[in-house]
Length: 167
Image (tube, rainbow, N blue to C red; front, top):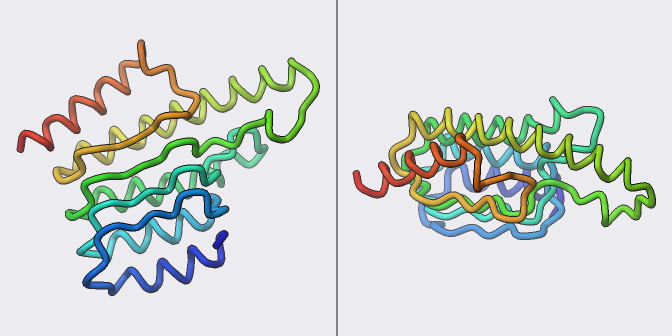
């Protein structure tokens, strides 16, 4: 559906009163489409599960990293206001340079470092949102460039999700 379809769908879910689960897995949605969906979540009162996995809403290799974060920032703001969403799947939201056929290891390494930095910013945004949200109980961040085993921010997100589950 790409960005244009995501925008149309976002307009529809703003006032939808029945849809509870929405899977937009691998729909070609980028930051622009994610921003529209994030804005729609502020008004939606029924959606409980949203899957945006395998959409490159965070293209960390791009020179315009701040605009690429706009989609994630919109989702962050929506999570602060939305009180129905329980599950958010964001698996593999960072574009893979290997899919673009870069032959040089230096370019791949540079991209991975950019992706780690961008993923860190995403983690900080999610922590901020979860500090104000008490309904989200699951965030799936697998297949992103995040070092979960030693990341304090990731552990803090897990604690906030547990607080919501126990609430």
